[in-house]
Image (cartoon, rainbow, N blue to C red):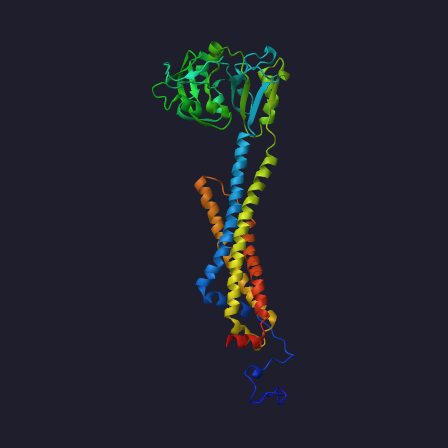
Length: 437
């Protein structure tokens, strides 16, 4: 068989003994081959829908990676906001006032020129911006132990060295105390000097007090105290959790407390600095310099540090998932190249250039990445919303993330498909056709 070129001349070396590979007529060197966008898109759609199950399984890695990235970034932003809000509420609204001198033994021997008055709660509540205030002091027990029964058991320990704190009625609100059972004492108990006590959970366990329905009595030395409540937790002043807390007047009458040692103040957001400046004057107008107010630092730096730490942690986790997804796309695309060797050879023989072959496989992997990115972004946003709703949080998401995440899927697809596309474009037509035989 002899082939005739476009000018009507015999093509040398095309006799009847020539092989099938030598009978292929290449395009004229002067003509330019082109690949229409519509044809490229059609090929991509056909390729991805030919084996839908494999396409979905291949995309699953990137779907999970993008979903993990979006969800973790969203949850990091959301939880970071909650942490910052918590920081703002607790730290930025707390002011404490103490005498300039230290070592008073919990207020027992404080000099009168630097005293904190027993009516500190009432004085501070007159200031605009104070939400709650209360005093707290260590009580010197003089070696006395606490017990829950007045009977000495020679076979077991029933007396314990438990710290006793004196407090005003407003302390528990300022410390944001939660009550497990019973109640806390108030200003009325304090004014009357009632022999009542509030136990922290640690002290309650040691004294074996589980409920207060029957008004259980404990003894500190020989002083009998009726337990009116047991705390569950406190946001401030954790020393309350392991102590017996009694009213100031009781501590003054029975244990010799002279003056309170510290005032705890809760302020409104943004009022801490102002209250820190006014509180010493309100407590000791004759000599305010004798008192020192501790005002929290600005939360801006801490807020940024917390958000950055959370973002770095979750970015690493999401990045690992994306790497796994990219490897999945690269692996399946390379397998697709091997399966379609004959198709590649035929296209090259019919005039497709290396660029056309590479473009086709890159377009397929990019489309797979885009599909995975869209699904993953949707799942990630849904995860943020569901978790936030379950935790009663306000979901917070960077507005650029829903747009950037699908594009990230495209980039992953392009990167993952680069080597398979190069592998496909490097196949020679004759070698591809022979390899397919």
